Image 1 (spheres, rainbow, N blue to C red):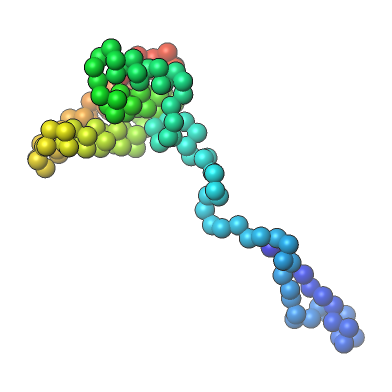
Image 2 (tube, rainbow, N blue to C red):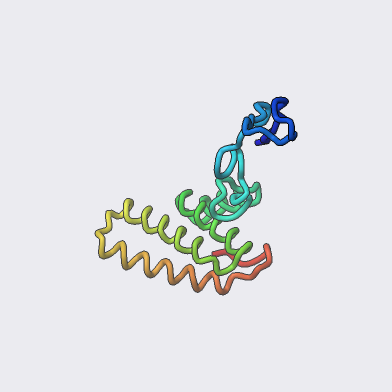
Length: 141
């Protein structure tokens, strides 16, 4: 926004008057990220898409290993994320939450079993992330 001061002709000293107007040609942007902003989601676990290589890998896991597509998707996204940022605890927590949520619904686990499964999965993912090499040709999780 631009504030414009106009000189008041009735003021002989040439001082700016108190009448300030706003230039209507500029539009004020809203707070936060603007529409279409994907600054935080270029790659990694929280991006909503898979690259063509990740898509092939997901379907290979699904078809060759007999894993459900949801689990294969989580595996591929987790591997990709940990290659970009090894040891990212937020990704590990989110992946373990999604895995436990899926298995809890599928096998109707009670709260105690869910809690235990979450602890085990989180620990396994933590260990796997520490062993994950930083290169894209790393081993699969």
